[in-house]
Image (cartoon, rainbow, N blue to C red; front, side, top):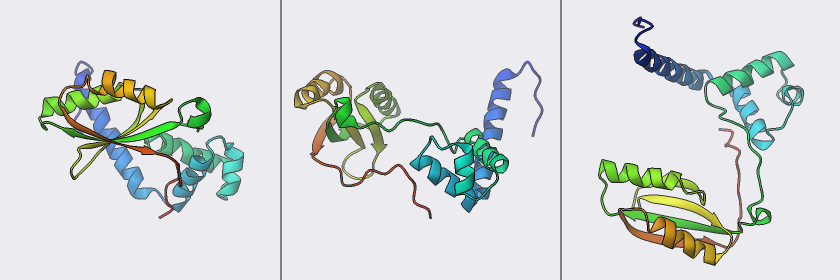
Length: 181
């Protein structure tokens, strides 16, 4: 690795990013079945104590905690969050919106994606192949709130050629745990 002076802080930042990326790639290569077991258990219950986790993966607490910390530092584990029932929270309507853009120029795509990131109602935004460019998962309180969302927020985003909405009326499966393979 090349050396940089302290004055070249921008270059140092880039170098740090490169090292972090190398570390993340290395971790992905050396992540073993025990790491994957730890991840799956934490995905199922992020409130497990280190003692409980270590018992379930058959490790002593210190090596288990070391593995968890390495997974966190490498960005494999990105955080911990509460899983909340959206209906009980007051947002029972789920809409899937397929978005097609007018053009695919760099600036238009960047502006669209930045606008979508600002909308609290959009829970997920996936880039697609096929007829639609994006698939959004949106949650709202009711159909009136959905109409307000479309008219005031989505229609305000430049460059959208079409919106095609499908409403979900039930959930068959919702998993946050990766497959073990």
